[in-house]
Every structure is written in C-alpha cells, then in structure tokens.
Image (cartoon, rainbow, N blue to C red):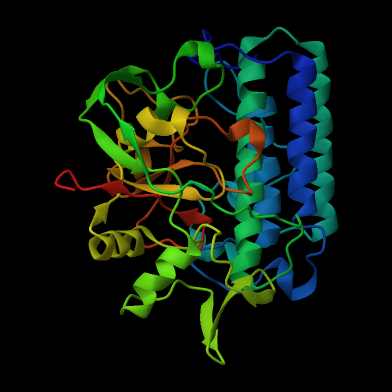
Length: 369
C-alpha cells in the first residue's frame, strides 16, 4: 500500500491527464539527452552540473521510489534495479562522487527508465482514484520536468547544441507600472491543485506601494552597465568591436531587446546599484505578477529562500527544507520551463552565485525616485 501524503485536500488532474503529462515529461527529457554518447555521457566534473548518465538514471529512480516502492509505513520495497539506491539517491550520494560510480551503461539505464514508466502507468490504470498515487505521479512528472530544464542549461554550460530549438522573444514593455500595495494572499491554496511544500499555504502579506518594471532587464540595458565598468555576463564576448552572446553551441550577435540571460543574483544586485534601482521582494513580485508579462527568464528577487508560516515538509522532505537560508528566490519561469510548472506562486531557488541557469531579473524603483 502506498503511503498517504498529508496533502489529500489538493485537487489532482484526472488519471488520463496525469498519464499524458508523465509521458510528455519523459519525451522532453529524452529529447534533450538523446544525442549524448561517449565522453558526453559523463562530461566534465563541475559543481554546477551532474553527469548526464547519472542524471538520466536518477530521474527514473525517483519515479520508482515514490510511485512504486513507497509503503504505508514509510519504508521502501526493493527496486527493480539491484543497488539502485546506492547509485541514484541524490540525498545520500555526494555530488562529486557521481562521476566515479559503477553506473549501468546507457542502454541499461534507458531500459530501467522504460520499465519503471510502464509499471507506473499500469498502477495508475489499476488505482485511478488513489489520492496518494496521483500525488506522487504528479511529483514525479514535475521532477522530470525540472531535470529536463537542468539538462537544457547543462547543454548551454558545456556548449552543446540546443535540442529544443528555443526561441527567445524580445521584451516589449517600457517603463514601470504602479502597484498600489496593501494586503494580499501570498502563496498557494489547496484549490490550486498540486503545489510544493514551500508554497504552502496562502497567508496574508502586506507590501507598500511600489513601481516595478514592465519587462525584465534587456541585453541593451545591461550593456550600458557593462560599458560603464560593469562585468559582462558569462557567455558574452566582444569581437571586432561588436558584442556577441553564446547560445548553446553558437556565437550570435547580441540581441538588444532580449532579456539578459545567465546573470547571478550578485550580478543583478550590481546592476541595480549602478542603475539606482532595486530587485523586488518575492512578495512584491507575486503581488504584481497578474499585471506582468513573464516567462522568458527566471527572475531573481531580493528574498532569501525560507519557509512560509506553518511550514510542514511534504513526503519528499529533501525538496525545500535543506536549502532554507542559503538560497535566493527566483520567480516566474524561463523559455525552457514546462508549461504545467508555470504559475504565479511557484518558487524557484538557487545560490546567489549561480548564473549558469536561465536567469535574469527585473527591477523596482527606489522609494525616493
């Protein structure tokens, strides 16, 4: 019997939708990894990426662990892959050891993933009304979506081609929008369906009136900062008097109206100091979000990642709590984020030096402006 999560009040999609989304998440993850072979299956040992062969196996292990192996008493049944826990449990296997593990080869890793997916679909067909199963299927889907995006930015980091043929639109808004401030409900409610524990639950927050940019900071705006002494973002270079940006495996002319991409929280703060602006808090960002266009890059906020009042960890306890106090919150979504993950309440989080992710930012006026 599958352990019941403590979130049974959350509404879930119908089983058919759960299954189709699960399959779509797997197809997307395969699309961003299906050309990897040889040395690229492990790649260089960097703190900001995982070895792809390990990560492919980890995604399937996670799906099996939560959707097939978890018992009502919290214990785990056996994996269909002997020794899987010692290979793929990210909370127990140190990051820098993952390159040296005795991993199955790619064919065996893919076969493991296909068999797990098949068994999860069979169980969903047998137990279509089981709340716990539907919750964990959704968890596994979103987990795979996030790893597909991680595979995508790994390809950028390592200079591989863009398997998703990404199109990045220009930012169209100019100037600021006035937000009157006041009290509002920050966070997710049970009627929102599946949400992560760090979004729970909606609670009253208050913000003072503020002005926030209609669009994220663009390459053109950031270039002015660079040309007056600011550091250029990673993946920028100046050649023959012209600025270029690396997009995966291609160097392209800097697109002036695209949102600046691959900047860290520290770099965003440096720009704000130069521009005499500031980052929004995450409460300000969520308050303004219904009136903003977002989703081209993740947007840094000034807020440290922490729990909402009354926080209680969901069954996947390692998702949020270990990172409280050490990470900064990003809001919105990026061009690489699966549509089903996009919502105003979703809280992404990374350490402030990370700029390898698809991150940008928008700014707020200082109160004295």
